[in-house]
Image 1 (cartoon, rainbow, N blue to C red):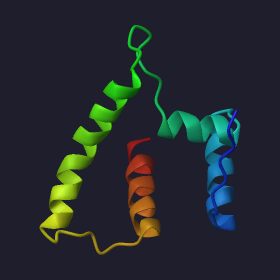
Image 2 (cartoon, helix red, strand yellow; image 1 turned 30 degrees about the vertical axis):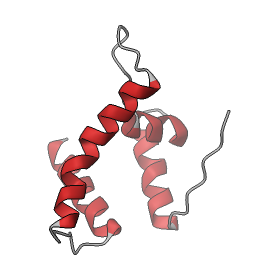
Image 3 (cartoon, rainbow, N blue to C red; image 1 turned 90 degrees about the vertical axis):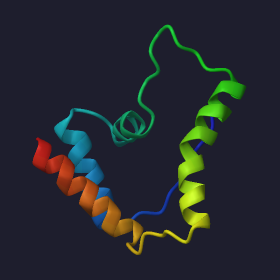
Image 4 (cartoon, rainbow, N blue to C red; image 1 turned 180 degrees about the horizontal axis):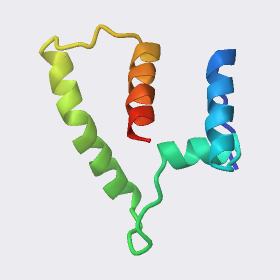
Length: 90
């Protein structure tokens, strides 16, 4: 099994820990659930199919970047916006 380490601020760690606790999950399970939703049971992707899906996902973003269309927000600002949108939904 592989290990993944990311650097986050103490505030981000506290937020992750609290969100996971509210769902009765470990931080690992919470993050995996949020970032890698389960595939339907009858769908298994080959490496080639997964690559095609990734290419389709990235294509419009690459084209926007080539046109010079960039977001001028920091990653933290984007995370905060998404978090506030999700909080508003609950």
